[in-house]
Structures are given as C-alpha cells and as structure tokens.
Length: 64
Image 1 (cartoon, one colour):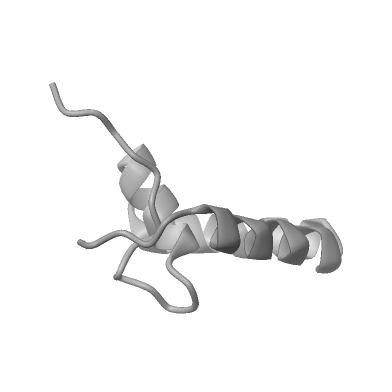
Image 2 (cartoon, rainbow, N blue to C red; image 1 turned 135 degrees about the horizontal axis):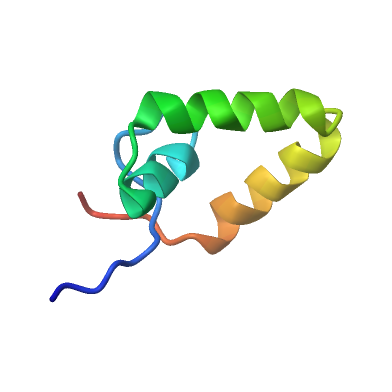
C-alpha cells in the first residue's frame, strides 16, 4: 500500500497547489481549480490568497 504525500504538482498553472491537492484527493484538476476560484471570491480575495501563498511555501515541490 503506497502512502499518499501532499506535494505541489508539476502540472501547474500558477504554483501547482491546486493540482497537488487534486492529485492527493484523486479528483480532476479542473474541478479543484473551480473550487479554489469559488473559495477565492467567497472569502473576499485576501484570505484565500494568503492561504494559497502559505500552502505554496509549505508544500514541497513534487517530482512528478
């Protein structure tokens, strides 16, 4: 049984955070990006942007 590891993906549009989350949760990358866009506007831009940048710094870059 392989262990799942949360990493930024090389299939990136900006930093690979959404693609990395999509790979981790085994969902379509486009769906994850749409969900991220909804959260971006629902939180008023700044809170989600801060969370995204923190995740970009904390999540290691994947080699896939």
